[in-house]
Length: 245
Image (cartoon, rainbow, N blue to C red):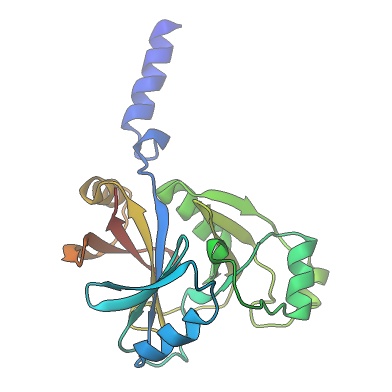
């Protein structure tokens, strides 16, 4: 029995999917591109509590921090007509139950000040279940899966039927995943360019992701106060890794 237990522990230690190998990732920021960074700063600044909100500069990007939320703005964007994995984003509580359906039907409009600590992202995916599994197995995210009934999907407007098939949690940030048709193009250079996750040690995190077959788009480099690298997630979503112990 003792030999069997030791063999199991040894296998777990060397298995690429071993839970203890996963770095601890936390949501860090959302990066948007636009030719008018000052306009974006002023627009989003009006949406949050001024007592909790301040402007920041990180490398070549200006940005806005409100409580735990960080938005960074780039200086340009290509044609937004091609669909990407990063559909849109919002603020407020999320669920996969009747509350979400009610909100989707009446198109809830959040009034300022927005709850900065409840930023969430809406993602498109050709295979939502596989995408959710990737976030769980590769990033250690917590996953909630829900297959919507056909009658519920029919009652909601297309294209994505407004009913997610999965909810992924990276820390306290929710990623809602919707089914869509291919193709999806890379988020790089689009208006919603990438999401960023923080880790304690960038080199260690990249090593784990490489062993799991994750494509590294750009190698580690200094960006302002941070060392960062860029990897590609499901459905060509660009994910920046930020070394922020």
